[in-house]
Image (tube, rainbow, N blue to C red; front, top):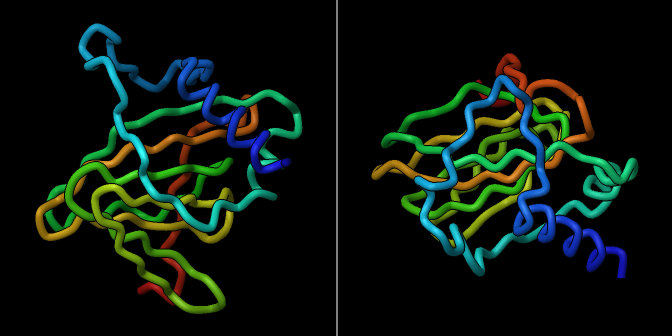
Amino acid sequence: MRLRLVLVVLALMVVGGAGVALAAHPTADPATVPRGFLAAHAKVNNIPLATLERALRSKKADLFIEHGHLDPNQATTFYTHPGPTFYVVVSGAVTNENVSGGECRRKTYAKGLGFVERNGGRGHRLTGGGNGADYYAVSMHPRNTGPDRRQVNPPGECR
């Protein structure tokens, strides 16, 4: 029941555009974004319910919706988020790299698949596949927590 409530609240925030971005983030002119679903029926497993509950505890959140692009084999730096972030791959493939259980883990997600990156931790890095990638990221952060991501040093396990 609790999971259903969390997912309904998240869906309402995304569909209703209830999120507020900090002034330092450029936003797209709504007239230039095609109407309709940007992604639909993307499969996301292992949703961290406790992380979502913590982010919603105050019943207030800052929401960020991003269209990201990675060129072939382009990698981001390692970074963290102040709240959970849902990623959905909409073209190509994205490899998510992070530390889990003392090991560097790399998992690749193709078009139509997604994942959730928890807040904090030791960071994660995204890498575009051989043909590059486009993805949508929906981040839900506690109100007024600052930038949507913070660069961190690569964990020793992932060097």
